[in-house]
Image (cartoon, rainbow, N blue to C red; front, side, top):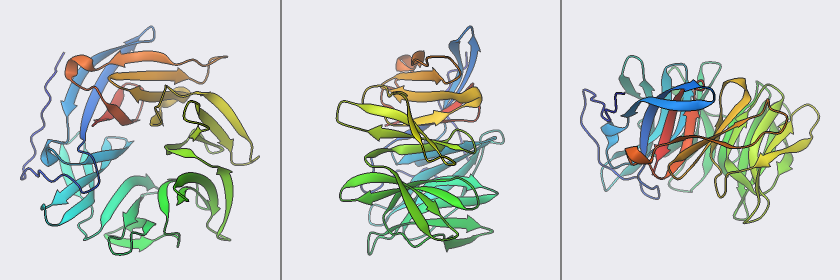
Length: 288
């Protein structure tokens, strides 16, 4: 097994730690599976270009990975959007502004992200296409989002010191409350179902499914204790990290239960938070 944990790019290393954000590192993991058991074939540190900085909020599609990364000096703290081609081993900074950009995603060839205005602390949803950035909607308290289709966006809004999930219609600019007290991960399972974590209490956090057509919410399963970050792989398999472990939840089974899929402790990855996959054998995990 190749356990190299380095990646050399042809540019200078950055060592900025983004103001207000914990240092974090992104790792690419290639696995193979037999009989439900996962073997780690390769693991690489892919954020060495920003050593000691903030490298987080992965969005993984095809061979391309999008991250929010710190950049600048200790006087001027910025978080910009970065695109890495994991196959060609190329990196490109997508933004270079005086503000902070977070939560990149791609929909219909257009890049979306949350932009934090340092002057007024507004957090707004913006898009990037052909080098031009444009504000998508007027809300200034957007924490997280999920583009659903041309008409609908799931918005997690910061309201009264809590995160509340809404379905927003771009045509009539209306919004419908889905759930209060949600986590920071929201993902589409398919064209009709949105998945999120509902923090019902300090003890009970549930992974839930919202039907966009019917408006109904159903409990899928309790989360791994105190874990809110998840991603959805092929064949409706949910992935969630906790400490050094990654767990899977197969929604196609009659009674889905969390199964421990892999343990990364021997690679010194002991605080796994966000993660992403473009299938069920290739992952990007954030250790912080």
